[in-house]
Length: 176
Picture (cartoon, helix red, strand yellow):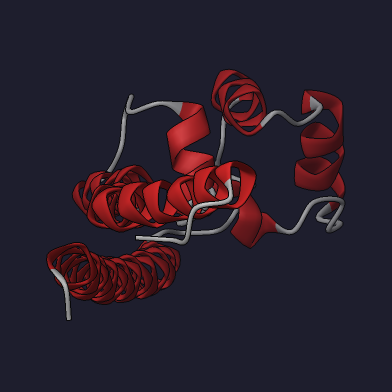
């Protein structure tokens, strides 16, 4: 085996190793992101359940100002809450008024929303998502570049041999 073929084979092997290592690392980062997403979802559910147990869910004792503040905080119409308090009718489920909103536990949504006011597990999830998306294309690109570098000498000598054959065919001399 000649030297250009050995260089091409070495480049092919190194490119395969880089691609395999990059794929394994990407899968590891994706698993880490999925685990953090599961933690975020369970923490959100656990926090909502604990908060629901702790709070009194009655609207009867609330003053008008507190009821208006609660409605504004939740983006509801205060008039509906006044009706619910006065008539004790469930216009809006009372549990939903006192529970915090569901936290976003998707890395892509967190990335588009920005890093402001994130819980600790959300910031870890955001960091894992950014690491996953930023590192994914690099191993493939590096493997392709290494393969191209390894193939260049082989391709060069291959083309030189074809040019020599073409020259000898045009001049009528036998190939070297």
